[in-house]
Length: 93
Image 1 (cartoon, helix red, strand yellow):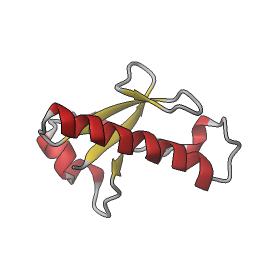
Image 2 (image 1 turned 90 degrees about the horizontal axis):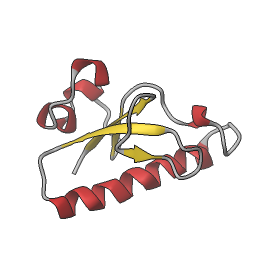
Image 3 (image 1 turned 135 degrees about the vertical axis):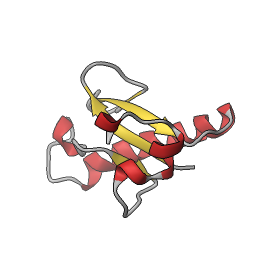
């Protein structure tokens, strides 16, 4: 399942366990069990941003400030299945 993630300063569905950055998430319609598994994948992706970046481990700038998909997708985020099926608002992508 694909998830669209967007950094947020006003609310959060998920927070990075390293720096505390908040993210809104939009996912394809799915069961609660699938969403729980997808949430674990998002948390792993957020941790990997800190491991692969050139920033200090506590720096929030380790994460993309634009929308991104988990798993990665090469298309434009606003046209991902997660954005379209999850009814992401235009400002999210």
